[in-house]
Image 1 (cartoon, rainbow, N blue to C red):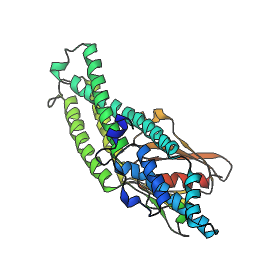
Image 2: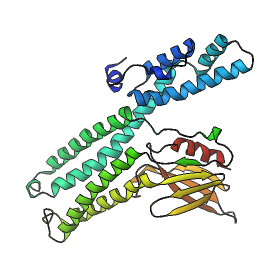
Image 3: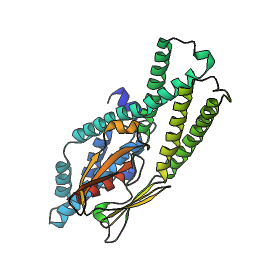
Length: 318
Protein backbone atom coordinates (compact mmCIF):
# COMPACT_ATOMS: atom_id res chain seq x y z
CA UNK A 1 0.00 0.00 0.00
CA UNK A 2 1.47 3.34 -1.06
CA UNK A 3 2.02 6.21 1.36
CA UNK A 4 -0.61 8.41 -0.34
CA UNK A 5 -3.19 5.64 -0.17
CA UNK A 6 -2.41 5.12 3.51
CA UNK A 7 -2.75 8.82 4.27
CA UNK A 8 -6.04 9.04 2.37
CA UNK A 9 -7.51 6.36 4.66
CA UNK A 10 -6.93 8.37 7.85
CA UNK A 11 -8.28 8.74 10.50
CA UNK A 12 -9.99 5.33 10.19
CA UNK A 13 -7.80 3.01 8.10
CA UNK A 14 -9.14 -0.30 9.40
CA UNK A 15 -11.98 -2.37 8.02
CA UNK A 16 -15.36 -1.50 9.51
CA UNK A 17 -16.52 -4.63 11.33
CA UNK A 18 -20.13 -3.46 11.07
CA UNK A 19 -19.96 -4.51 7.42
CA UNK A 20 -19.03 -8.07 8.34
CA UNK A 21 -21.55 -10.64 7.14
CA UNK A 22 -20.60 -13.55 9.41
CA UNK A 23 -19.61 -15.55 6.35
CA UNK A 24 -15.86 -16.22 6.33
CA UNK A 25 -15.48 -16.20 2.55
CA UNK A 26 -17.54 -13.06 2.02
CA UNK A 27 -15.79 -11.22 4.85
CA UNK A 28 -12.36 -12.15 3.55
CA UNK A 29 -13.31 -10.67 0.18
CA UNK A 30 -14.65 -7.49 1.76
CA UNK A 31 -11.50 -7.06 3.86
CA UNK A 32 -9.27 -7.65 0.83
CA UNK A 33 -11.29 -5.09 -1.13
CA UNK A 34 -11.12 -2.58 1.72
CA UNK A 35 -7.32 -2.84 1.68
CA UNK A 36 -7.37 -1.80 -2.00
CA UNK A 37 -9.60 1.26 -1.53
CA UNK A 38 -8.71 4.89 -0.86
CA UNK A 39 -10.48 7.38 1.36
CA UNK A 40 -11.69 7.58 4.93
CA UNK A 41 -14.03 4.96 6.36
CA UNK A 42 -17.21 6.65 5.13
CA UNK A 43 -15.82 6.86 1.59
CA UNK A 44 -14.64 3.23 1.51
CA UNK A 45 -17.85 2.03 3.12
CA UNK A 46 -19.83 3.52 0.24
CA UNK A 47 -18.15 1.02 -2.09
CA UNK A 48 -18.03 -1.82 0.42
CA UNK A 49 -21.73 -1.58 1.28
CA UNK A 50 -22.71 -1.90 -2.38
CA UNK A 51 -20.40 -4.90 -2.86
CA UNK A 52 -21.68 -6.47 0.36
CA UNK A 53 -25.25 -6.29 -0.92
CA UNK A 54 -24.20 -7.91 -4.19
CA UNK A 55 -22.40 -10.74 -2.40
CA UNK A 56 -25.30 -11.48 -0.08
CA UNK A 57 -27.85 -11.30 -2.90
CA UNK A 58 -25.81 -13.64 -5.08
CA UNK A 59 -25.27 -16.12 -2.26
CA UNK A 60 -28.95 -16.06 -1.32
CA UNK A 61 -29.95 -16.64 -4.94
CA UNK A 62 -27.57 -19.59 -5.27
CA UNK A 63 -28.82 -21.19 -2.05
CA UNK A 64 -32.40 -20.78 -3.24
CA UNK A 65 -31.42 -22.71 -6.36
CA UNK A 66 -30.20 -25.58 -4.18
CA UNK A 67 -26.49 -24.76 -3.93
CA UNK A 68 -24.69 -25.63 -0.67
CA UNK A 69 -23.89 -22.55 1.48
CA UNK A 70 -20.08 -22.70 1.25
CA UNK A 71 -20.18 -23.31 -2.48
CA UNK A 72 -22.65 -20.43 -2.88
CA UNK A 73 -20.31 -18.09 -0.99
CA UNK A 74 -17.32 -19.04 -3.14
CA UNK A 75 -19.39 -18.63 -6.30
CA UNK A 76 -20.55 -15.18 -5.21
CA UNK A 77 -16.96 -14.08 -4.58
CA UNK A 78 -15.80 -15.49 -7.90
CA UNK A 79 -18.59 -13.78 -9.80
CA UNK A 80 -17.57 -10.33 -8.51
CA UNK A 81 -14.02 -10.76 -9.72
CA UNK A 82 -10.67 -9.96 -8.06
CA UNK A 83 -10.76 -7.46 -5.21
CA UNK A 84 -7.65 -5.78 -6.66
CA UNK A 85 -9.47 -5.00 -9.90
CA UNK A 86 -12.44 -3.47 -8.08
CA UNK A 87 -10.07 -1.50 -5.88
CA UNK A 88 -8.25 -0.15 -8.90
CA UNK A 89 -11.56 0.96 -10.44
CA UNK A 90 -12.43 2.87 -7.26
CA UNK A 91 -9.02 4.54 -7.16
CA UNK A 92 -9.34 5.62 -10.79
CA UNK A 93 -12.80 7.01 -10.13
CA UNK A 94 -11.55 8.91 -7.07
CA UNK A 95 -8.54 10.20 -9.04
CA UNK A 96 -10.76 11.60 -11.78
CA UNK A 97 -13.08 13.08 -9.15
CA UNK A 98 -10.08 14.71 -7.43
CA UNK A 99 -9.00 16.45 -10.62
CA UNK A 100 -12.56 17.59 -11.31
CA UNK A 101 -12.97 18.98 -7.79
CA UNK A 102 -9.58 20.69 -7.90
CA UNK A 103 -10.52 22.52 -11.09
CA UNK A 104 -14.10 23.32 -10.09
CA UNK A 105 -13.17 24.67 -6.65
CA UNK A 106 -9.62 25.95 -7.15
CA UNK A 107 -10.15 28.01 -10.31
CA UNK A 108 -13.18 30.03 -9.11
CA UNK A 109 -11.53 30.65 -5.74
CA UNK A 110 -8.26 31.76 -7.39
CA UNK A 111 -10.10 34.16 -9.69
CA UNK A 112 -12.16 35.47 -6.81
CA UNK A 113 -9.25 35.99 -4.40
CA UNK A 114 -6.94 37.48 -7.04
CA UNK A 115 -9.59 40.03 -7.98
CA UNK A 116 -10.26 40.72 -4.32
CA UNK A 117 -6.54 41.32 -3.74
CA UNK A 118 -6.41 43.52 -6.83
CA UNK A 119 -9.07 45.73 -5.28
CA UNK A 120 -6.65 46.72 -2.52
CA UNK A 121 -4.66 49.90 -3.15
CA UNK A 122 -1.48 48.25 -1.90
CA UNK A 123 -1.64 45.43 -4.42
CA UNK A 124 -2.40 47.60 -7.46
CA UNK A 125 1.32 48.30 -7.74
CA UNK A 126 2.15 44.59 -8.13
CA UNK A 127 3.51 43.29 -11.42
CA UNK A 128 1.65 40.88 -13.63
CA UNK A 129 4.03 38.15 -12.53
CA UNK A 130 2.97 38.85 -8.96
CA UNK A 131 -0.70 38.43 -9.85
CA UNK A 132 0.04 35.21 -11.75
CA UNK A 133 1.97 33.83 -8.77
CA UNK A 134 -0.89 34.86 -6.47
CA UNK A 135 -3.42 33.16 -8.74
CA UNK A 136 -1.42 29.94 -8.88
CA UNK A 137 -0.98 29.89 -5.09
CA UNK A 138 -4.71 30.29 -4.46
CA UNK A 139 -5.54 27.72 -7.14
CA UNK A 140 -3.10 25.05 -5.98
CA UNK A 141 -3.62 25.56 -2.24
CA UNK A 142 -7.40 25.83 -2.11
CA UNK A 143 -7.96 23.45 -5.01
CA UNK A 144 -5.87 20.68 -3.44
CA UNK A 145 -7.31 21.18 0.05
CA UNK A 146 -10.92 21.09 -1.15
CA UNK A 147 -10.30 18.26 -3.62
CA UNK A 148 -8.62 16.14 -0.93
CA UNK A 149 -11.50 16.70 1.49
CA UNK A 150 -14.27 16.08 -1.04
CA UNK A 151 -12.52 13.07 -2.59
CA UNK A 152 -11.10 11.25 0.42
CA UNK A 153 -12.96 12.69 3.41
CA UNK A 154 -16.57 13.10 2.32
CA UNK A 155 -18.59 10.10 1.30
CA UNK A 156 -20.60 10.25 -1.92
CA UNK A 157 -24.29 10.89 -1.63
CA UNK A 158 -26.21 8.24 0.25
CA UNK A 159 -28.73 5.97 -1.39
CA UNK A 160 -31.81 5.95 0.81
CA UNK A 161 -34.04 4.40 -1.87
CA UNK A 162 -33.37 1.91 -4.64
CA UNK A 163 -35.39 1.89 -7.83
CA UNK A 164 -35.56 -1.90 -7.96
CA UNK A 165 -37.25 -2.00 -4.55
CA UNK A 166 -39.71 0.86 -5.06
CA UNK A 167 -43.31 -0.15 -4.46
CA UNK A 168 -45.96 0.74 -7.09
CA UNK A 169 -46.92 4.36 -6.53
CA UNK A 170 -43.90 5.04 -4.28
CA UNK A 171 -42.01 8.30 -4.93
CA UNK A 172 -38.25 8.44 -5.54
CA UNK A 173 -36.92 11.59 -3.85
CA UNK A 174 -33.60 13.34 -4.51
CA UNK A 175 -32.57 15.93 -1.91
CA UNK A 176 -29.60 17.56 -0.16
CA UNK A 177 -28.64 16.60 3.44
CA UNK A 178 -28.58 19.11 6.35
CA UNK A 179 -24.77 19.44 6.18
CA UNK A 180 -25.02 20.74 2.61
CA UNK A 181 -27.63 23.27 3.66
CA UNK A 182 -25.38 24.54 6.47
CA UNK A 183 -22.44 24.93 4.08
CA UNK A 184 -24.67 26.73 1.58
CA UNK A 185 -25.82 29.17 4.28
CA UNK A 186 -22.20 30.03 5.12
CA UNK A 187 -21.40 30.54 1.44
CA UNK A 188 -24.41 32.79 0.96
CA UNK A 189 -23.39 34.98 3.90
CA UNK A 190 -19.85 35.30 2.53
CA UNK A 191 -21.11 36.15 -0.95
CA UNK A 192 -23.55 38.66 0.51
CA UNK A 193 -20.70 40.46 2.29
CA UNK A 194 -18.47 40.53 -0.79
CA UNK A 195 -21.29 41.50 -3.14
CA UNK A 196 -22.44 44.30 -0.85
CA UNK A 197 -18.87 45.66 -0.54
CA UNK A 198 -18.42 45.60 -4.32
CA UNK A 199 -21.82 47.20 -4.93
CA UNK A 200 -21.01 50.02 -2.51
CA UNK A 201 -17.63 50.38 -4.19
CA UNK A 202 -19.35 51.13 -7.50
CA UNK A 203 -20.82 54.23 -5.81
CA UNK A 204 -17.45 55.15 -4.23
CA UNK A 205 -18.48 53.97 -0.78
CA UNK A 206 -16.47 51.70 1.49
CA UNK A 207 -13.11 49.98 1.22
CA UNK A 208 -13.68 48.93 -2.41
CA UNK A 209 -14.36 52.48 -3.59
CA UNK A 210 -10.92 52.69 -5.24
CA UNK A 211 -11.43 49.44 -7.14
CA UNK A 212 -11.89 49.62 -10.90
CA UNK A 213 -15.54 49.66 -11.97
CA UNK A 214 -15.15 46.49 -14.07
CA UNK A 215 -13.71 44.57 -11.11
CA UNK A 216 -16.53 45.68 -8.81
CA UNK A 217 -19.15 44.70 -11.38
CA UNK A 218 -17.53 41.29 -11.81
CA UNK A 219 -17.42 40.79 -8.04
CA UNK A 220 -21.12 41.63 -7.82
CA UNK A 221 -21.79 39.09 -10.58
CA UNK A 222 -19.74 36.42 -8.77
CA UNK A 223 -21.57 37.11 -5.51
CA UNK A 224 -24.99 36.92 -7.13
CA UNK A 225 -24.22 33.65 -8.92
CA UNK A 226 -22.82 32.23 -5.67
CA UNK A 227 -25.93 33.15 -3.69
CA UNK A 228 -28.36 31.91 -6.34
CA UNK A 229 -26.29 28.80 -7.04
CA UNK A 230 -26.26 27.84 -3.36
CA UNK A 231 -30.06 27.66 -3.35
CA UNK A 232 -29.74 24.30 -5.10
CA UNK A 233 -29.63 22.71 -1.63
CA UNK A 234 -33.35 23.52 -1.34
CA UNK A 235 -34.20 21.76 -4.59
CA UNK A 236 -36.09 18.49 -4.54
CA UNK A 237 -36.55 16.12 -7.43
CA UNK A 238 -39.45 13.68 -7.23
CA UNK A 239 -40.26 10.83 -9.59
CA UNK A 240 -43.83 9.63 -9.34
CA UNK A 241 -44.59 6.97 -11.92
CA UNK A 242 -43.83 8.53 -15.31
CA UNK A 243 -43.60 12.07 -13.96
CA UNK A 244 -40.56 14.05 -12.80
CA UNK A 245 -41.28 16.99 -10.49
CA UNK A 246 -38.60 19.68 -10.03
CA UNK A 247 -39.16 21.82 -6.95
CA UNK A 248 -37.03 24.84 -6.07
CA UNK A 249 -37.37 28.06 -4.09
CA UNK A 250 -38.59 29.85 -7.19
CA UNK A 251 -40.49 27.32 -9.27
CA UNK A 252 -42.18 23.95 -9.60
CA UNK A 253 -41.98 22.10 -12.89
CA UNK A 254 -43.80 18.90 -13.81
CA UNK A 255 -42.09 16.90 -16.58
CA UNK A 256 -43.70 13.86 -18.24
CA UNK A 257 -41.14 11.12 -18.81
CA UNK A 258 -43.17 9.14 -21.33
CA UNK A 259 -41.62 11.12 -24.19
CA UNK A 260 -38.03 11.14 -22.86
CA UNK A 261 -35.62 10.22 -25.67
CA UNK A 262 -32.17 11.06 -24.26
CA UNK A 263 -30.31 12.10 -21.11
CA UNK A 264 -26.83 13.56 -21.52
CA UNK A 265 -24.37 15.70 -19.51
CA UNK A 266 -24.31 19.35 -20.52
CA UNK A 267 -21.09 20.72 -22.05
CA UNK A 268 -18.51 21.65 -19.42
CA UNK A 269 -18.31 25.29 -20.50
CA UNK A 270 -21.89 25.83 -19.34
CA UNK A 271 -20.71 25.57 -15.72
CA UNK A 272 -19.08 28.99 -16.14
CA UNK A 273 -22.16 30.69 -17.54
CA UNK A 274 -25.10 28.90 -15.92
CA UNK A 275 -26.15 29.33 -12.31
CA UNK A 276 -25.99 26.26 -10.08
CA UNK A 277 -23.42 24.07 -8.33
CA UNK A 278 -23.20 20.56 -9.75
CA UNK A 279 -23.36 18.59 -12.97
CA UNK A 280 -25.99 19.86 -15.38
CA UNK A 281 -27.86 17.25 -17.43
CA UNK A 282 -29.94 17.88 -20.54
CA UNK A 283 -33.20 15.93 -20.90
CA UNK A 284 -34.42 15.61 -24.49
CA UNK A 285 -38.10 15.01 -25.26
CA UNK A 286 -40.27 14.72 -28.32
CA UNK A 287 -43.53 16.65 -28.34
CA UNK A 288 -46.90 15.52 -29.66
CA UNK A 289 -46.06 16.88 -33.12
CA UNK A 290 -42.78 15.01 -33.38
CA UNK A 291 -40.66 18.05 -32.57
CA UNK A 292 -37.80 18.17 -30.07
CA UNK A 293 -37.85 19.97 -26.74
CA UNK A 294 -35.39 19.88 -23.86
CA UNK A 295 -34.99 20.88 -20.25
CA UNK A 296 -32.18 20.62 -17.73
CA UNK A 297 -31.60 19.51 -14.19
CA UNK A 298 -28.59 19.87 -11.88
CA UNK A 299 -27.27 17.09 -9.68
CA UNK A 300 -24.25 17.19 -7.39
CA UNK A 301 -22.32 14.56 -5.46
CA UNK A 302 -24.00 15.54 -2.16
CA UNK A 303 -27.61 14.94 -3.23
CA UNK A 304 -29.04 11.71 -1.84
CA UNK A 305 -30.39 9.24 -4.43
CA UNK A 306 -28.97 11.23 -7.35
CA UNK A 307 -27.38 8.10 -8.86
CA UNK A 308 -30.70 6.25 -8.58
CA UNK A 309 -32.44 9.12 -10.40
CA UNK A 310 -29.95 9.01 -13.28
CA UNK A 311 -30.38 5.26 -13.58
CA UNK A 312 -34.16 5.60 -13.56
CA UNK A 313 -34.09 8.34 -16.22
CA UNK A 314 -31.92 6.15 -18.44
CA UNK A 315 -34.45 3.36 -18.06
CA UNK A 316 -37.24 5.74 -19.09
CA UNK A 317 -35.51 6.67 -22.35
CA UNK A 318 -37.57 5.48 -25.31
